[in-house]
Amino acid sequence: MKIKYSSISARGSKRAWPFLLPGLAGVSIFVVLPFLDTVRRSGGPSVYREVLENRAFRLAAGNTLRFMGTALPLLMAVSFLLSLLVYRCAGKRSLFKTVLVLPVAVPAAGVVLLWRMVFCRDGILNGLTGLSVDWIRGPQSFAVLVFVYLWKNVGYQMLLWLAALAGIPDELYEAAEVDGAGELKKLLYITIPQVKRSAGMILFLAVINSFKVFREAYIVAGPYPHERLYLLQHLFNHWFLGMEIEKMSAAAVLLTAVIGGTLGLFAAAAFMGTEKQKAEQTAKQKRKRKGEQEV
Amino acid sequence: MRKGKRTVRIFGGGVLFAVSVGFVVLPMLLSAAASFMAEDELAFRYLEVLELGRAPVRAALLPSYPTAEPYRELLLHSPGFFIMFWNSCLQVFSVLAGQLLVGMPAAWAFARFRFPGKKALFFLYLILMVMPFQVMMAPSYLILDRLGLLDTHLAVIVPGIFSTFPVYIMERFFESIPNSLLEAAYMDGAGELTVFFRVGIPMGFPGIMTALLLDFFEYWNALEQPLTFLKNKELWPLSLYLPNVTADKASLAFAAGMITVLLPALLYLNGQTWLEQGISGTGVKE
Figure 1 (cartoon, rainbow over the protein chains, first blue to last red):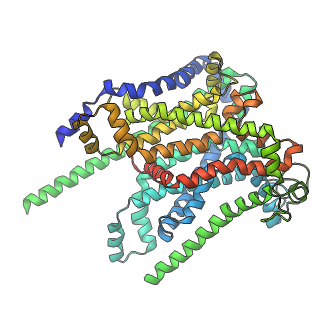
Figure 2 (cartoon, rainbow over the protein chains, first blue to last red):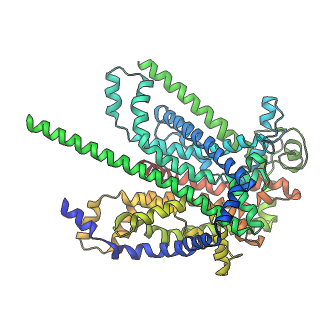
Figure 3 (cartoon, rainbow over the protein chains, first blue to last red):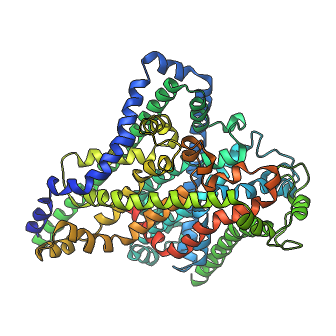
């Protein structure tokens, strides 16, 4: 067993480069080097201070954070609930699953008119509720954006949760049932602790998609939306049109630092988690072995 | 206890049914119905939706006077639309082909080899994957400008080829191939390329298909890239047709929307099994 493993690890750098190099060269030329150039262009601390004190930047950063703070927990919770329902109440090849995941494939341009139909001032939503809210141009457009993000991504996230649920061994539930545990207890003491490990990865993918919601915001509300909907992406666009490369570069560096830092923390936490698990497992095995020896 | 389980089942099924119908099926039917309406019916029902004026929306799941005229007009008498459709196809399929050519081998290298700096590099790929387009907007523009690629199809295609998301997805799958299988191939004297083509690609197939499907959805939906890198409207893809539809063509908007949705929806329905396997594979493993 051990010999096999070392023979795999012997397939080292020399053989890896031909596979890796074409892609890596492209990434370097088209992403990494241009980005480093950006860092150079961003200028000194005075530009960074200017960006951080810029009113539009503060507004956009605040809105983006608020969007993520609202939409991510909602998406995680709703998709988890749906995955529980699909897992418990529908078959493996359920039509529900097909239907709920479909929005992943639907391009923003294909649903603009639909969202206008629902959310415009004389639209379906106001018609059904008797309200006269301007969902697209008013402050409530924020809620619409959260909804559209949920609509688009809930199926995708649900598939991720379903995979996590499928990984829970049936014996755990059976044992709990023997002990007389009800649905709620099984959920709280088996399902949730078991899927927790996957939650980090699932959140990570949700964050990636949260930046793409700009497309919907742009198509439905245009380049100059209500103040509450003004996201970092809008700001970058406006700076780009105004050729404010210095400010853009500084803001890009700041955003990258925040994303990289958060991701680094996540990775560190995940790493510590697996290390802890490994340690626990070896401790368990040791105890087991000890027990066997004593018997 | 049995009975309790059944109630849960029925209740859950009911919720799923309500959510699926209310949020996906009905909206799709509404859009589809509107695409078969003639100009005067659209003006009566959806004047405000088409931004032609203000009048209450009178939504309908079936057109009163169904007609395929908007589709005929779009497909036969709108050369602009036709060009955009082909621009989309050209751009998207070139990106996907490029990703197969450079992204797939890179994923294989990350998954099956050890080399110095691997972890750091993979972390870099992850960061690039999260980064919103706007961060790279100015740098990409400048490099594309320097290489003379602006205002060509390549301005959208080349950066797309080197996106790191498909590498991540395929890597998950290549990594899960059991070592013993590869060992057996190496023992038989197979070279690196043979192992990659004969074992890696077939075993990683769901992952490869998932990466391609998700990227198809992504680039079919491209908005920021063409808006930023293509000034020449003759190069614009289909995803920019609707945001720029003019008042005199407003009656074709719903049909254009349906045609935009059609290809990704068909691909989704055909590739659903792979997509499910593939998406599942990306989330669970640490």
